[in-house]
Length: 118
Image (cartoon, rainbow, N blue to C red; front, side):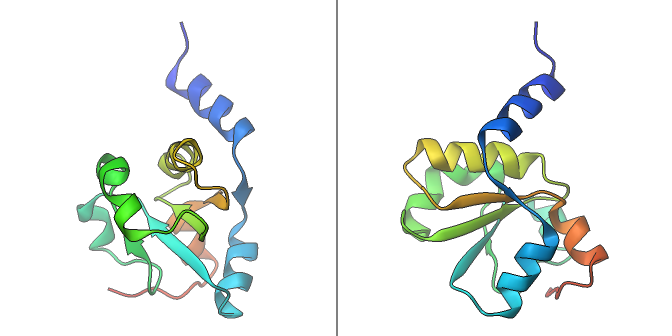
């Protein structure tokens, strides 16, 4: 029987992940990227990446198609990079091809001095 960590490791081996440094560089160069925050409302109330689209992980499949074009470049993030990995895999299964998960999550973003909005 697999553990949750086993499943996470398998997903992380299949998806693309990006570092905070790379995401910050793209953000600062104003590249056309959708930052997708999949944290829960009680987490997003603590701040988010400016301009990020917020769809909690539990609502992703039901809401993403109406809000994010399938050809968009998407960086998915959560608090620490785990839920975003599962979300990235889901998006790929739904036909999104330019998806990556923020490896260090929002914590890594703030630790690196990334911009935050309320």
